[in-house]
Length: 182
Image 1 (cartoon, helix red, strand yellow):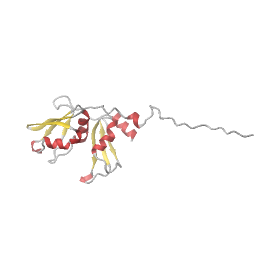
Image 2 (image 1 turned 45 degrees about the vertical axis):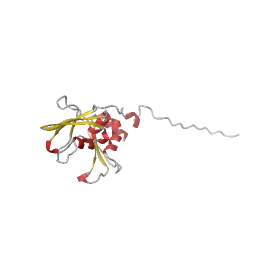
Image 3 (image 1 turned 30 degrees about the horizontal axis):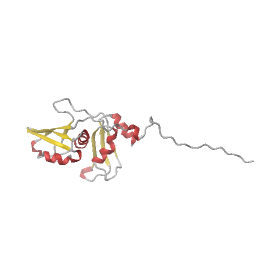
Image 4 (image 1 turned 30 degrees about the vertical axis):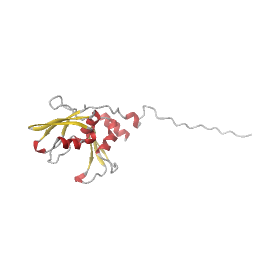
């Protein structure tokens, strides 16, 4: 007589929707805090920055029109092809240094209207990023988790990028989602 040995098949089930997988924590990419217009405030007249300079700087964000008002300070606006371009430009270029030491200050809302939203989330530091990472690829990596206030690669003392970046979301929930997924 032959002995029969019982066995139990092993079936791997997909994770449930309630688990913390990368896909369940990502937000809808159309979740924007910006329109297709960003406002520029407070460039000094000595900046020697032109509309063409700003157009070249933000070319990856698809600016359609840049208008600088030349009264006292250089204020104005940038109109983009879509909200995605304005969202990317705000995250990547707000606060960047200009050649004369001033900073490019961008606003989501017109400066005379209500104040632009302030970030509530802590600043995240990402380390050990590939050396070919740039601000655009960093934005593409972290934006699916929510609107970003700050997204910059870090180069110490003007040296080359060494794999560290800073990211700050507007909402802490989005930062927590990104942390959980990474």
